[in-house]
Image 1 (cartoon, rainbow, N blue to C red):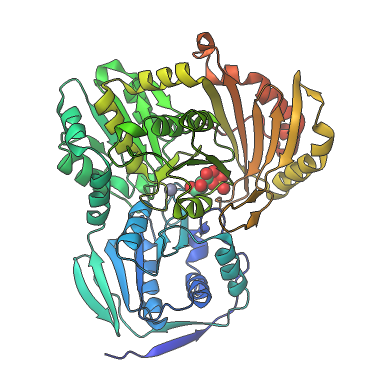
Image 2 (image 1 turned 120 degrees about the vertical axis):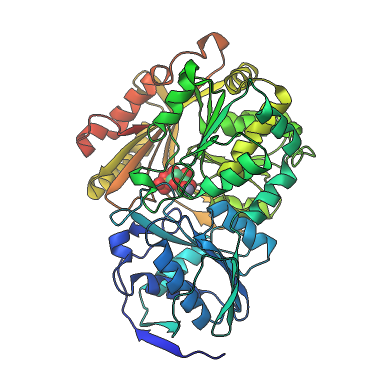
Length: 547
Ligand code: G1P
Ligand code: ZN
């Protein structure tokens, strides 16, 4: 069946520049006529060789997901794709999309998500292109897409009605085949190949072990129901907030102690009978791990995951290396040193891990922002991290908090925290960063709040595989005692600027490990204020979110 191609005249929108993870804007921005179409056309124009090939398409189910999917399907037909694999109801978690791209050797994929940002008509929306390796496109590609958005004069679509995405099966849009797939099946099969499901099932069946998984009304609900409750036999009710909602129930689907406070409180209350808690974000790639009255910091989680690789079937043969984003704590570096494997330090954003994973240089990667993952896909993976922890707990028969404390005893503790100043004035954020950059050379060697500055720079990264250079990735102030303060502006926000201040101090002495985090970091918090004049620059007395 041939179908009428339609070219719709268009003109560029300003600001269609992908950030840390694709293009993120308010739904109200995306709903402007031609806005989404322009960006999708720019992606398709930047590709070459897609004729007859397979595209994977899905999203986290947030508001506007359904409309955008239909638009993109028609445009994919016009762009000459031979087939689109789309999740039922337009649903695919970010890691599941990556798994599907890889399993079916697709040409690439489009993921509709704004991750952990709120959804709904006044919330956020986002769109991201992933390459055939299953990972986010690199900066070279996203820069080219942005260039293209600035010169676009038309988009191309076909004359076709919306299709019913509610049932698994196949249909056509013109000559393009649309295969509606079970969004969970391929992904669940992949996880089953990595972890000891029998052992985890035995743990979940124990009367003295009770777990809660909070899906935060986001995409991982169906994944967690299938994997935890059906395949692993966890009691019904283990998964809470398990139905994806277009506005995430009005919440902020970000698994941290602020937005997942209920889960943290339940684990802190001995009457709940819970021994282990976990959560994931809007699109299912972030995770939070909670023990009894104990939130595992994501940087520690990465280190524990690396240190316990030998217990996990999919990794027991050894890790090629590990990688962390620059602001992530150096806890995993210590594990790598002991294992005698390389540890790579990359800029923020999962896209930088892709080339290391593809080249077989790293097996496990992680970020302080609750992202952990491995070479099984090319995205961070929330449920993967949860199963990895469950597998560790099942083998070691030790509570999560004790596992972390024992880890600190062995490696020392990298006390760590991130302070976020959200929604500050964009110009104020830029001014703060520019002032800081200008002062870096003078800072070295000086005594600041009684801490001596050993080095200060703006992080730059040369990819060891393809040699590409990424500059201005965050200002680092390194102290003589090994502590660090890092400053950077968020690249995922949709309104104003968010300043992130990352604080880290290494404490070897086990008798000091239980000192509360903010207290242990107080000298660094003071130094950050002195050096960056945060209050004067932003008008804020303190951070909005401490994680
Ligand atoms: C944030 C996190 C970063 C993560 C990204 C996408 O980016 O800090 O680690 O990769 O979200 O989930 P940022 O807003 O800091 O640019
Ligand atoms: Zn996410």
